[in-house]
Image 1 (cartoon, rainbow, N blue to C red):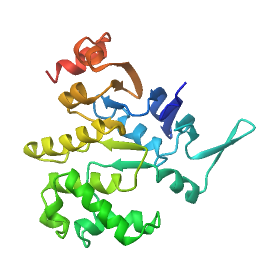
Image 2: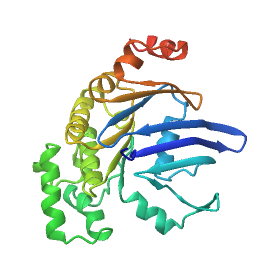
Image 3: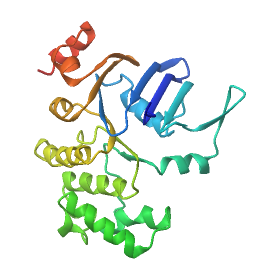
Amino acid sequence: MTTPMIKAVDVWKSYGSLDVLKGIDLEVAPGSVTCLIGPSGSGKSTFLRCVNHLEKVTAGRLFVDGELIGYRERDGVLHEMSERDAARQRRGIGMVFQQFNLFGHRTVLENIIEAPVHVKGESVASATERARELLAMVGLESKASAYPIQLSGGQQQRVAIARAVAMDPKLMLFDEPTSALDPELVGEVLSVMQKLAEQGMTMLVVTHEMNFAREVADRVAFMAEGRIVEYGTPAEVLDNPREERTQAFLSTLF
């Protein structure tokens, strides 16, 4: 049996009396793409942030590549890891947010080599060579010396993807990476994501881009009110949904 890249077991997340996640069970196979869809406020982004321990689960367990995330278990009791150990786990998990979060005072190239040099200890020469390869992959090799303010939103998001991939993650998380973009810029970011999928990158993507989910995802999970309501292939969930809640959501989009 292949170890799932992500395995969520009865994951709950609460803020006081508000339950945002209500018993999420999910497995993501290595090399696959899973899209999380659903209305705003359904818990999609919260779950994504729990996967790399940016949010702490209230109950349940989350594993990445067989390793319990954020906690150590002793005698059935979970003990939270130190921030240093949690940061070590995050090195293998790339994340791209809605906002680009680039360093404005650094060039595109400097943004990409920052973490490989200062976190992984790579040489500047090696990190720079890899960064130029990644800029070519995202179609921005001519922008290496530019600053973020000189780029469009779509270009900045492509740099953010290259920066995350520069750490050679085993898993990429995308939190609505096109939602802050003008419509005409969405396609250039989705094409980069599709290229990553074709290269075998394991991806968990929160998205409202249904065409991307249909064409690129191996599995789609529809979430509502903190639960996974429906899960299956894109054809099953998007084209032939069984659940009324899924049908109602999709009817507002198509």
